[in-house]
Length: 278
Image (cartoon, rainbow, N blue to C red; front, side):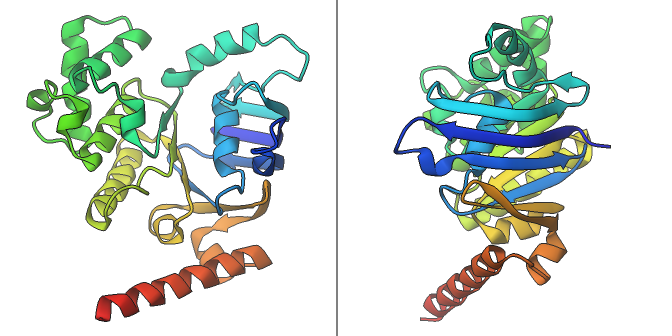
């Protein structure tokens, strides 16, 4: 059973600088409790596709899609020329409640002048009818779930008082605050060192196991995708080059572009190993 179904997604930017990130005829699905990796080089269209699902593309983007379904909700963007008011109202209800996003750089999504506890509490209260006390209790639980021990004592800190890895955990706590069915993670471990990156991948696995949330994990790092995901979509120049189980993609790739990506990854791994030996 699919949670998310996308059929024939097309995105065209009326902006010369971003025209290369257009998405063409993209179709895929994701099931509850599945971690679906979306991999490709910069400009492959992977982040653009995720923004289209969330309805967050800029005005210069023209989106034409056969269908986007999230459970029983139709969140297909309106065709060019059609009114967006009803769509925007629907997406305001969907975002946070049913879909949430974790960004690459948590510092850009956290308010540096507001304590992290308040940011989580306000997010919870914006999407649910609960008291501030109940929301604060839930915020502490979410911080604990995200791997910030003794979350209650950490809620009084500002983002600049935390490390990059801790800020990313706060971002995940905020994303989980309303129990979304789908979590989109856009390069969430890229800016982290290897040790923290490993911790974050373990956190994503645990979240899926405990909540049944589906995760779309966007990355250019094949090693991260291989260690975390169940299935993989390989995107190239705005199109879906190949999809399949992790084992099939990494051990028996069919598309020439996938083979090239894997070969480059192996070369980088060897280079890194050689430098480590010096």
